[in-house]
Length: 370
Image (cartoon, rainbow, N blue to C red; front, side, top):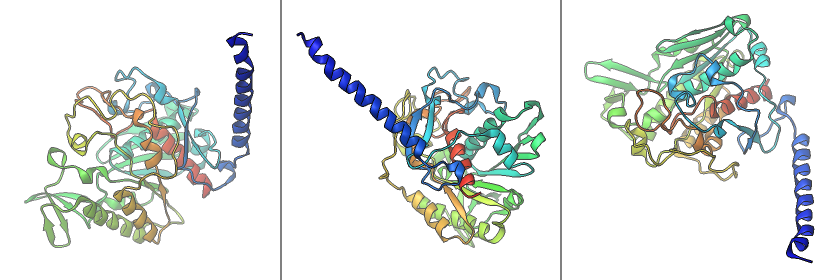
């Protein structure tokens, strides 16, 4: 009997073991409670599963995608990053049903308030719903500063972006641009929305040419600068007080989009608009790993966000995207950020792509607390 003959029983045993393991995993997934049934579970611990049916839409057919997010149109040659679906460890996440979302939110306004990462999520949801709309011609789009909107006419549903880097105000005064840590003059525009999704963080860290303010002010005190985490905490506390004082939780659901991770090799590279096309997310085509392990490091800014939300009297849910997004070093535009953009973008995310999972989870959160 040759070596090949001796190996056959071992190979057959491994095959049977592999089939049995696959069957166990399938049965376990089927037995897991479904979010659609109102089951509650941790939606943010889980794994990225390869799924050939993804993405949920073709970005080339979505008229709202800005050049900076449209990686494939900008020449990105690989497509594996589009083929991952988020799967929580403890429950089943039903496939996103855009038509059901349109019906559920008929006659309402969904508003994202924040920086370009809010724009990332807003564009993603607009494309997911556009792909599901029975008559795409009945979808209108308007863009402006600070408000852009996609309106689904047949459902009287508006999906709105209110662009705000800090949530609090930056005001041009005689001395220069002043970041007012205790002022939110534009916040009245957010009232009346039925779902508010807030976000801020990255712009608080920028220095040099990327910094968009000259001074900080709190009350009557003006500062040249201060510890950025302390400033962020003060600004976010102003937002929390505004929500508690102004939002009627019986009419409006409030979500805070957690901290979206960047994948630069250094903080200097992140704030440098001409970052070199090397390192970081450059030429990354696969996730760092496919699953969270439940022991991820919690950053100081995450601690601030969680602490403030816990202290609020108005119910606010945290869309805790940090750990699951940290795995996806492959999902950034990198050097495929579009015409006129030099360097590398390891902050934002390609559309279609990772923000679709954020919205998938957002919808599950809404189903859990329906």
